[in-house]
Amino acid sequence: MGKARLKNLDYVIFIPYIIMSIIGVVMVYSASANIALQNGGSPLSYLIKQLIFVIISIVIVAVMTAMNIKYLRKPGFLKFLLYAFILVLIGLLVVGKTINGAAGWIHLGPVNIQPAEFVKFFLIIWLADVIDKGQPEITLSFRSWWDQMKWPLFFTAVLIALILKQPDSGGAAINLAIAFILFNCSGFSWKRALGLIYGCVVAAFLAFEFILVPMAKSDSFSNSYQLQRIVAFTNPFGHAQGTGQQVVNSYYAISNGGLFGVGLGNSVQKTGYLPEPNTDFIMSILTEELGAIAAFLVLALLAVIILRTVQIGVRSNNTYQSLVCYGVATYMSIQTFFNMGGVLGVLPITGVTFPFISYGGSSILTLSFCLGLVLNISSRQRMERRALKVARK
Image 1: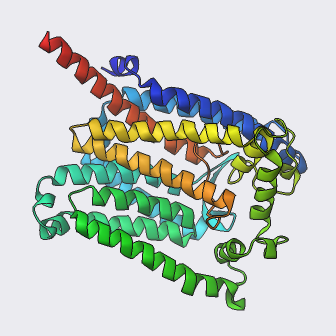
Image 2: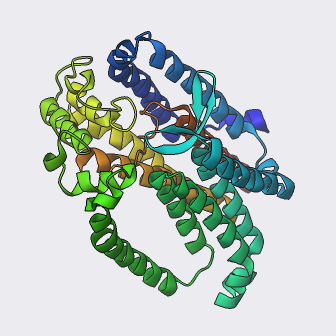
């Protein structure tokens, strides 16, 4: 059956994924060679790591596509992952490696692993399983919904709170978005869901405008890395030599690129002006070197993957499979939104990478687990449709 699922691979998803991975390898090398030299390393160091990550990710996609999904749904396995992630995230608060102000990394030789990234995949498969197994009781009434969902809600809140404590606001927000969508797809009243969405938007705006911004501007929180990003967001050019440097130089990179770019490898901003050019701001460098048209094409490729994932979820008659697809689509959409929002200065910088393009093993591997699972579901649908056609004949 595994080989049959690989033969029925959904190329509408797989081909854009491969193209984006290749673009990512090229752009990581272009954006990082200068940084590596400045740090006394080889200009090929980031390229080699990224290439290894991509090769591993392709293997993961193949394995996830071929495997039997039931192994991911074993109660003992999911319970082990839940408690393991909680313990690891607690441990990171004590001994985690700090990068860009967040103590959320495990140092393993030449690479750093970010457990918060893998929590995204875990939340998708765990909540999809919990909600599917809770049917149809959770759709009977709000009381029934609450009885089934109160403990999953509690443990989800614990995971997100631990990620936020690192602090990793971007990772916490993405995990929150995944959980929010899945819980609202569980049979929760659409009226309550709509009211909750409006309430959350209003509360987030009020908290940002009247709590976070005043806190960020006060002297008491001048050393807070996360809050200073808010200061930079509200007035980047007023802090161009400090916390606003990333956003300002991102503007310059995008402006320099125009429609067709200055040429691959010819970026000015990556030569020390724009911090993190190979991770958070790789789309700024891509736009500068290859132009706005190339950036639009990359976004279009990602949109194809996301829309196809949603379509697969809508077509499925299996609740678990539909929820997995909706969770993966939410994950990729919100991550893209946060990354591009930071690059364009319409959102505070959250330290979120761009899917499949930015340098970062944890992000690529997590996305590969998700994409492989979606391809698995798509292959199952294709095989079922073909079997149905044969039966009708």
